[in-house]
Image (cartoon, rainbow, N blue to C red; front, side, top):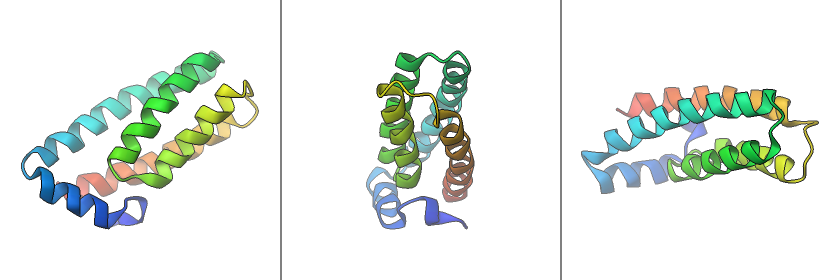
Length: 112
């Protein structure tokens, strides 16, 4: 069970605190993140820096809320790059975020 992508202590606290609502939280996060990652990819292809910043900011926050801090940090990097109006590293960072997201997704699903 690859939980290194999640803060295990925090996620267990969240699970205990939310009880039955925890599964809804996870499913909502995954559905929302799947959609936002698609929109982020489209914004990157279209070189829409304001949109990239907006979507990555949202993903950064929701990933932090779900205790996926390494993933949240990659989205922060994307947001920072977009706000600095530089596209140079964004495609590489997006690729990194997608690899990390797949790991987080697997870890979260294993908790359900």
